[in-house]
Length: 280
Length: 347
Image (cartoon, rainbow over the protein chains, first blue to last red):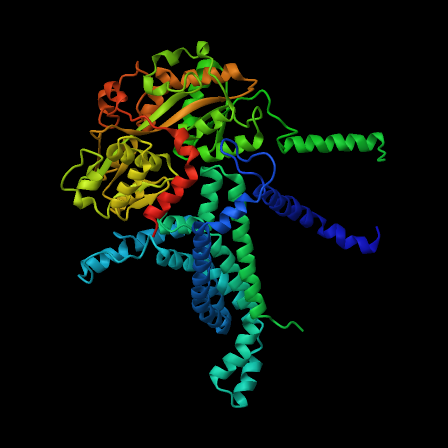
C-alpha cells in the first residue's frame, strides 16, 4: 500500500461514522428546513424559505432563542466561577487527595441526568426540602420561587454540567510547572500577580474547552429545563421537539433546530476569538 | 466499468447477508411478522408477561412487540411512508391516530374477524370502523384528601375554590389531557369546545399552575399540587400505596386517555392483526387490562368485580359521560394553540 494513503485508511472508519451519522443527517435537516410547509402532511411539494421567514418575523421564537442563550451563558458563568477554584485546588493537592477529589468531581456523572434533575425538583419545589424547611423555621410565609423559572433551571444545569468545566481546566492546570510560580514569587510577584500573569494564561486552553463544552451542552439541554422549569420556561430545544413531534411541522422544526445550532456556533466563535490562545 | 470475479460476487452477497442480519430496514424486511406496539415500563412488562402469552395460548400466534409513544410512532410511520409501516397494529391516543389516518397510513378493520367489536360501548367505536378504542383511562378530578378542605365536585372548582390557587396541576399542551382542559374550559365558559379564546382567557385566570408532560403522580405525592386532572387508575395505584388521594367524576363529564388500535395499510398479516385486536377487545383481554391498569373495560360484557369497584369506578352508564373532543381541530391549530398556551402559563 502506498505509504501516503495509509493515514487516509486509518481515519476512514471515523470519517465514515461522522459522515453517516452527523453530516448526512445535518444535510437532511438543512434540506427539510427549506421544504414547503403543509397542513396534513409533514411537508409540502417544492421548496420555500417560509420557515426561516417565520423565525425571523416572530418575536416568540426570537425571545425563546435569546432566553436559551442567556440560560446557557448564565450556566457557563456559574460553572466557571465555581469550577476554576475546584480545579485549582485539585491540581495543587497531593497525589492521594487528588485521586479522591477527582473521583468526587466525577461522581455526579455516574448518576443519570434525569435523576439529578429530579433531585433538584425535590429540593427546590414549592413544597420541597428548602421551602418546607424555611417555612417550618418561620423564616418565610409563602414559598420562595426557586423552581418553575430560569433561576431553578440555571442552578440545576450548573450542577449537572459542573464536571465538564472542572475536568478540562484541571487538565490544563496539571501541565503548569510549579517552578514557574515559585520563580515568579521569588522575584517578588504577589500571589494575585502570579495567578493573573502565569496561572490564568496557562489555564486558558482548559477554560476555553470547559466554557465551550458547558455552553453547548446547556443551550441544547432538554431534560433539566423541562423538569425543573415545569414547562413554564420554554427553551429552543423544547420548542424544536414540540414542533417536530407534537405539531408535526418538520420544515419549521428543522429551521428552528438549525437556527439554534447557528446561534450557538456564532456565540462559540465570538468567545474563541475573544479568548484566542496563542499556540506556539 | 467495475469487473468482479465469482469470489468477489460471493463476498458481496455475503456482505449483503451480513447487512440483513443487522436488520437494515430496506434489505431485511420483516414481511410476514406482525409487529404490535405498546408503551414502555409497566406496559411493556405486562404485554410481554401476560397479554401476548395469553394471546399466543389462545391463537397459537406470537406477534412481535415494539415499544413507542404516539409521537414516535407518528414520526416513524411518516418517515417510512404509507404502506411501509414498521408497525402492524398501532396502539396510540386518538389524537395521533387522527393524523395518521388522515394521511392514509391505516386501513379499515375487518369487523367480520373482530366479533368483540359488536360488544363495545359506543365511546369505543367512534371512528366508523377505522379503529377501536381498546383501553380507556377515565380522567376525573384527583385531589389530596389531607390537603383539601372542600372536596371538588365540578371542573369549575379549579376556578372557584380559592384553596386550590397556586396548587393546581395541569398536563401541558403537549399532552392530550392539556388539550382537553383547553377544550373543556372553552366548553364550560364559552359554550363550545372550539371557542378557545374564552378557554385561554379562563385558563389564564388559574394563575401559575404546575405543569407536567406526563407524570402528575410525583407532584401530587410531594404535595406540589393538591388538585389536578387525574386518571382513576393512577389514583388507585397511589391510594393503594398509602397516599391520601381520591378522584371524583365531575358534574360536567369526564376526560379520558383513549388507546385506539389501528391496522397499518398494506399489511401482509392483516388477518392476524384483526385477530389480535379482537383479543384485546374480548372480555378476556379487557379483564387482563382492567386488573393490571385499572382501566375501564370497553366491552359491555365485562363485569367489574366487587373488589375492583373502587379502583375502576367508571363503567356501565358512566361510560356515556365522556365529553367528545375534536382532535382534527386541535391538530390543525397545534402550533398556534401551543404558543398561546405557553404565553398563558409561561414564567
